[in-house]
Length: 116
Length: 109
Image (cartoon, rainbow over the protein chains, first blue to last red):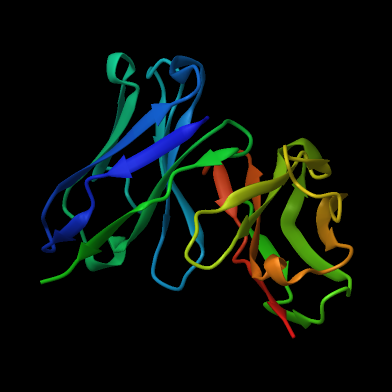
């Protein structure tokens, strides 16, 4: 069974940092692109970042560029999202998902709250 | 940057009725890169349709997708109570690579 399990969310003060993890299982991890997509409370889905299958290419939404860094550890079948200089508007559920043109498997999400 | 605009914002229908959801792109896009998702309350999104008209694994045949160019449609032929959800269209293109519409909420009367 394909599984993506996010962890690492929580409450953080503005300007703080947090690292999210996405643990993958049930599929050949090193053949899939992995993405982070977030959803602010009561709002829609917003793509955040991607890393390609071997980690050699990444991209970011303008809203997080320069503050977030995505990476992957093939040995651990895990993708990370290092988030720094967090702002209240980064408050959201962060989902990891896989795919290139579309996203065919999703984790359950992890909630990040940025507030003083 | 391609913008996807979904309409209507909310659709309220009775079980057994047909639901027609629209997704309009700000410029012509390849249908190969247009997908639809269902998000039920409190759950993660689920892929319904990819390449504009191909159902994902396990998706009932009452869900169908169509369209090309700038206009795409998700149709639910006979609504069931469990179809209560928000539906999103999504496109893969360039800069940013992936964009979502703002969603259409389907309510069941």
